[in-house]
Length: 321
Image (cartoon, rainbow, N blue to C red; front, side, top):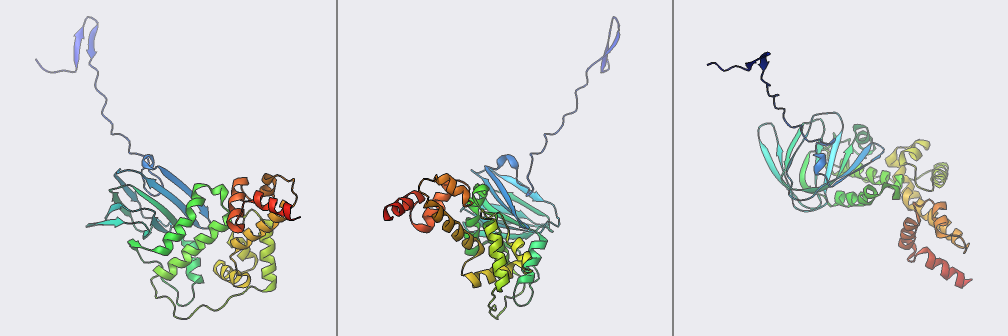
């Protein structure tokens, strides 16, 4: 008797059902940096003038493979926020295992294919810097022009660690942080990168003093006051003054003694103190009028800069009068 896929019945041959071919399970979804999306306990990002900032966290000992194809996206800088991360980076003919402590960084160009096996969980702030943003930083650098950034893996960098920590609150609650502040931190990161990790040696000559002309100072302050909530970028103000972003930041600080963000905070608080002298005005109204996200944000900043919450400050003023 021969095996056959059919058999006979009173009404004729009946075909046996043929099992459908098994399909492989679909690959888990990954994000734009090659991380397995379902493994991420934190996945946040924001964009600031050519720099996209991420926070990517995987808790526990989960292992995963990360891969990104070669592209023209720019440069990726990662800063580890905690100890104990280990990854195995796969090169064409070999692999190298790296241990990341808190404050350890990596710098890699998206033009190279990247493959790595994550052997532990991790918590990173990452900055994806476009070629345009990097070129601006290279052009603004004093001395010989650097030829791009050197590749770095698992080296400690305290400056980048502090700058990354400054971005953590903005990633947690972007509504509570001004665009101007994030823009300044990202500009500081790119400027530092070309100085500390550029392929050319840093210049020996000191930077010359930079100051704003009276007209540029007045224009910059007017633009800042018009956006009391900080919803303005350094690039907008620098363009209005026909200056590079780096030159404008240095010149504004030399001229006023403060960064644009610090100066704007001082203006907010000055306005808030004037409004608080209306003793019946609700604190929430004062917060909104001075560009703070909410009363809690207002109270935190006011306390930090004056040493007492706005309610206590107002009670002292009422008694003094």
